[in-house]
Length: 443
Image (cartoon, rainbow, N blue to C red; front, top):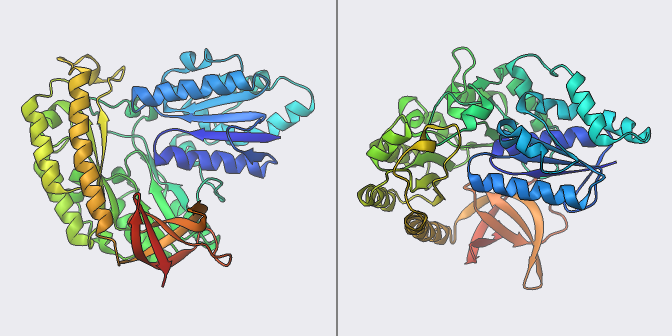
């Protein structure tokens, strides 16, 4: 049998999809491209913005229509919050809530036996989910998503945390994922050592809010120190960090050479009044201080940020405050989003709403800042040495290349060599920049 997977949203979703695909493959399924004919399609959804939900619906409708005899399993945050709507997108579409998401990993062999007996896969899967108890009782079921092999990435992902205790006015991920829970540190270290033994040279530690990692008295800083002490074969990349975490804890461990000089700061705005309405637990000065702290810890790190434009009530002056701060902070890249009202959140009914035209103009202002600062950061890499993890082969201008990601999260191409292997890390020197891709040679 064949299975295909489609992921929307964050690195946490990517991590969980990898685990689902790995489990299907180990139970005899062949993993195919999502556009190819398959027996089972799994769509892992996101609810951060209305656009991510629209894309999910479009993908689900298309695959349901194009392959009516296949089973379409839909899970993730959007499926958790809107299961009835998801189920109406196709007669072969089955919505799987987050508290049963881990059970998808146990489903493959059952589906294969059902197809061999000539059973309808949709009914077969629905009956199975209705009759199954959780794979693991309690919150630790959320950490069953641990892939031993990765189908879609050359680097490894490890989920260390789930859920969120913040109640930001614009976000409903906390409604879907629930309260913050953390993976037991002994299990976490065991999984990391398994990945190390398999030869993975980079591991991405991911979660909804990894800043809130806690195992007894162990926080994120303690965890990183323990990982660095007990492993040695891979570099570590972190997902988003909160400004207040960077300031309230001793995170000097981030200066360690095995921790990638690539950070993503969840800023959202640089206007104090907007941050207050967002119910964010910090102010603009904290964002500035957090960025300064990261630059003290690492030499010329890549620092990205999230910014929301057009939050309800945002004035021209508040927008100018954010623009002025971003120009000063000089983020390597800014991920800017037009405000998207989410049902069930405090901001859903906030007034006044900002007209779409004005929101678009403000988004454009910040994208210009991001384009300029990103271009400058890329230009600064010319002649520098970078450690590049090889991920895939590509071609340009009739020449073949290996393409990979540097420790500071830049796309790098090096001349193709048959002796090089996917997943290895090479020391390279940047020679030129073309269309936001660095071209380098192996040192």
